Length: 84
Image (cartoon, rainbow, N blue to C red; front, side, top):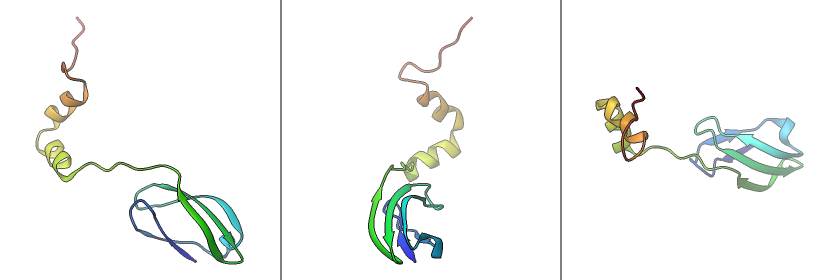
């Protein structure tokens, strides 16, 4: 049985142990948690439990080129605090 991840669209393969199952399934591509319900090998319900936020291409590019600037931005609007 196969389901598509609701967060990223990745195909998640489930073996026969999930033919009659109700509970969480983790997408290994994006780490989203899906709550599924199956009966007799048929999917009856799928819902996304959590959402995984991915950085934009610009954010990734900025982190790679300027790791110190990206770290400072993450510390808050006033920048990093120095204790001393």
